[in-house]
Amino acid sequence: MKDFTGNLLGYVTDIIDILIVSYIIYKGIILLRGTRALQLFKGIMVIVIVMVASSYLQLKTLQWLMDKAFTYGVFAILIIFQPELRRALEQIGRGRLFSRSSTPDEDRLIAFIETVTKASFYMAKRRIGALMVLERETGISEYIETGIPIEGKCSSELLINIFIPNTPLHDGAVIFRKDNVMAAGCYLPLSENPTISKELGTRHRAAIGISEVSDALALVVSEETGQVSIAVNGEITRNFTEEKLNEFLHDKLSSSSRSTSTLWQRRVKRNG
Image (tube, rainbow, N blue to C red):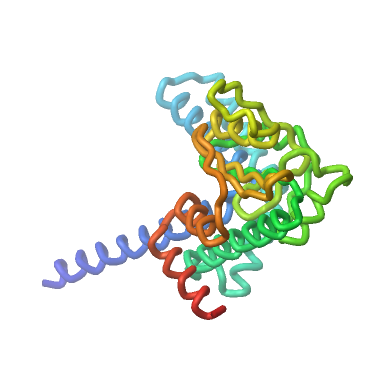
C-alpha cells in the first residue's frame, strides 16, 4: 500500500512539474513574440537540432563545433536577450508574467479600430486623401522598408498629421503591424487589373495592388469624393459608413470575432 501511495505521489509530482515547465515555456514564447529575439530563438533551435543530429550520426567534427558554440553561446545569449530578460524580470516583479492577456489584446484591437475609423472619417469630411494598409498573416516588410520608419503607437492625431496635404509623408501609404504604425510614405505596387473603374485614382490602384500580393487590408480615403473604401483580396468595396467600417474591420482583424463584437457593442452602449 505504501509503495502504491508513493508511486501515485511520484506521478502527481511529475505531472505538476511538467505542467509548470510547459506553462513557463509558453509564457516565454509569448514574451518573445513580436520581437527580434524570436528570430534569434529560432536560430538557436536550429543549432540544437544540428547538435542532436551530429551526435546521433557520429559526426565528430560538427559535434565538436556545436559543443564549442554552446560553451560560449551561453554568454552570447545573456547579451543578446538582455532586453527581453530584463522585461521578463520586470513582469515577474509586477506579477504580470502569469496573468491572462486575452482581454487586453481584445481591448487594444477595439481601440485601434476606433482610432483608424475616427481618423478616416475626420479626413473624409475634409477631403484629405489617405492610404492605410493593415498587415495580417502575410508579412509585407519589403513595402514597409520603402517608407520612413515610425514604429510608434497608432493615434488619430498622428494619422491625420501624416496625411495633411503638402507634408513630406502625405503621398505614400501608412502601414500598420497590429496596432503600431510601422512606416509612412511607403510605396505600394499598382494593380494592373484592366477591369478597375477608370474613375479610381492612384491610391485606389495601390490599395488593390497590395491586396493582390498579400492578405493585407488597404483602406483608402478619397480626396475627390470623401468616400472611404477598403481593398481586400484584389477587390475593392467603396462608400463605407462609420458603422459599417467598424463592423468590417472587426470581422477581418479579430481572431475571436464573436467576443470582440460583443465588447464593441458594450462600448457603443456605454458611449451612448
